[in-house]
Amino acid sequence: MTTGDEFTGERFLPGVIGEIAYEHCHRYAFARRYVAGRRVLDAACGEGYGSALLADVAQSVVGIDIEADVIAKAAATYGKRTNLFFEAASVTRLPLPDASIDAVVSFETIEHLKAEDQRPMLDEFARVLAPGGILILSSPNRPEYSDARSYANPFHRHELDRDELSQLLQPGFSAQRWFHQRRYLGSAIWSETPGERFEALSGSAADVGTAALPPAMYFIAIAASASESLPLQAPALSLYADGDDAEWKRIDHEMLRGQYRHNEELREMVAHRDEVIAERTRSETTMRQERDDARRALAAEQERLLRQIEAQERLVAYRESVRWWLVLPWLRARRLWNRIRPA
Image (cartoon, rainbow, N blue to C red):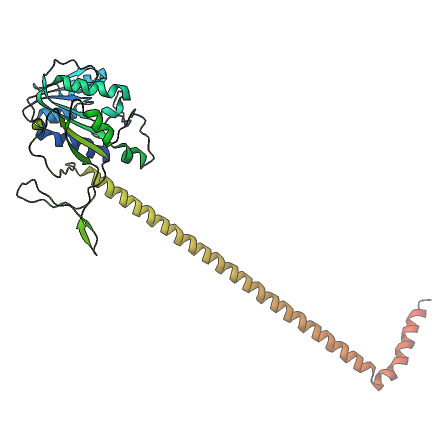
């Protein structure tokens, strides 16, 4: 176990937002109706925020955690309440008298223990519970929490599925009432008239039907040694939201960030496309200019050759004329005279 204010994922810290905040806070909020007016043990209480929530309605609450530093911090934060106490101890060796507690709350504790320590913990819970007492316990559902996600929580030593947890509870807590917990994203409609009934629907614009019970990410079991000790009524559905809507704000912020990144990517794609088009246009313009220059050069060369040919043709025509033959002897004589005159 670790201590300190840094969130490692081992235990929930108040102020941390996200899925874990909904899960942990909802469990304690759910448990409050069952511990009202009772003597309560919050086993593995951690930072003590849950113990304080229970103490708002309970007769008394004792929070126990194995980490002395964490207990000291919890006592400093919440210890001024006259019905709330904290003590450092192991959940397998509770420093409490027999039958001194009316309700044990143990949220996300059992999976942190080795397999061989899980039964002793439940035996201790049974020992300290008074007749008619209840246990409210939560545990991650291994097939959904770990197997389906290919996820291994480094702080969990031995996770359980529903049958394993039920069998483990059976000796001391044969009467059991089960609830499924997982984060839910949907639309909620509340009646202004309080009631225990609810409906769950799922579907689309084409078809709507009764929603199936979703697989549990966590199980919450209310258990007792006898069925008459279980609460007579329990909500068929319990909803929880944080008062600041921090998670929705985070989701909205992430969506806006995602949309901003998407827009930036689109802008970069458009800029790249425009650059490619501009470069292609520049290349085509250059190639067109080079072709035009080559055509002009070729035309100029053709013109020069034509003039040269025409000049040759005139020369040939002249030499073939009568005048040329009359002038030719005189030209030869002058050429000879030019050679011998210097001598």
